Amino acid sequence: MFLEWSLLTIVTLTAFFLFSQVLFYKNLLEKEQKGTGVMKTTLREAETLIRKYQVQLQRSLGNVDLMTSEMIAIKADLKGVKQSHASLKFEKKRLEEEMINLKNKIDALS
Image (cartoon, rainbow, N blue to C red; front, top):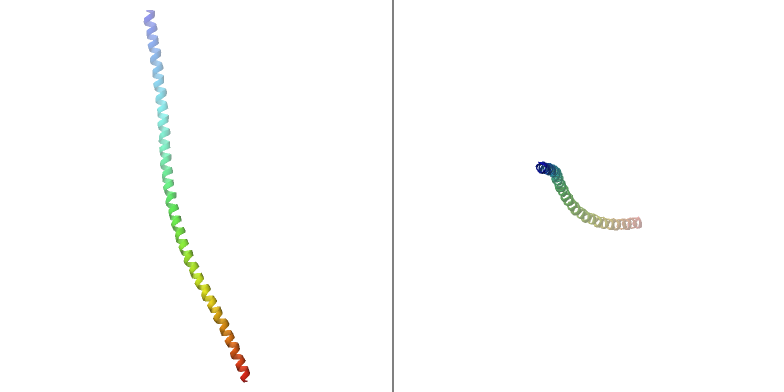
């Protein structure tokens, strides 16, 4: 009788221990799955943000390229304006000198 009682007690305690271990690991697995789900969601959101910012960066780089080409064109226009200004300035001096010469001739004739 003692042997049966002790065997029943050992089997019962072992079953209770194994049942508690199953519940513990099941709970641990559920927490891990929840954490994994949250991590996957976070990674998806991060990938979405990365794609968004990558598109913005590409647009910005495209805008920088456009601005660079416009700046080069404006520099070329500025060089042209400076050259024409220099030639007009030279022409103005030449005309002023010619005007002074003509005034001197008029004064000499009068």
